Image 1 (spheres, rainbow, N blue to C red):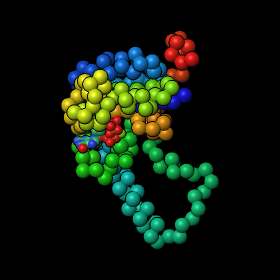
Image 2 (image 1 turned 180 degrees about the vertical axis):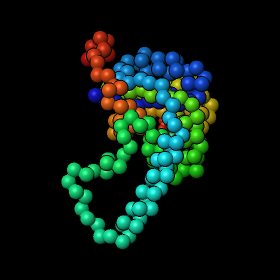
Image 3 (image 1 turned 90 degrees about the vertical axis):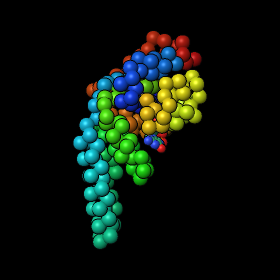
Length: 193
Ligand code: GTP
Ligand code: MG
């Protein structure tokens, strides 16, 4: 079954919207598989940013001066990922690293505690994105979380994974192994035929 990573951003926590946001996914019929309040340390964010930069510099030299050896069996690119559950926000937003707003985004996400959630269900990734609404809350439809509860892109209260692969990747980034629960919801036969 599909999994998605939903995160209530620091503004959602500060504004007392945790219950409201969580209940929208719950009422829809998705199953909560992980839940925690987490302060992403700024140092972690910066550490990773630095290590990525040094990684690029290193790779530049390696690729420039050495012949390319085939990658040894069993050594995938995931070996360079941070440890499971480290909540490294730069890794989470790695696709946005070249954007001018990236430093502001990292400051925002590390400015206070976030609520990390794993949700499971049929079509949960796309459906959660619909419940959340457009990135810019001013363009988000009324009835969506951002449409009802936010006004600015830089304070858009909630995150949702954009693909099933990213759902898995992000759950792995923010949760450790023992923090997730596989369980059977009694309502399941009333939701899925
Ligand atoms: P997420 O669910 O948080 O990933 O949002 P999204 O998928 O709707 O948008 P995207 O992945 O493109 O951007 C990730 C986050 O970066 C957004 O939710 C915003 O918090 C932030 N962001 C995106 N564009 C801007 C921008 O132009 N300015 C600022 N300040 N933040 C931005
Ligand atoms: Mg996104």
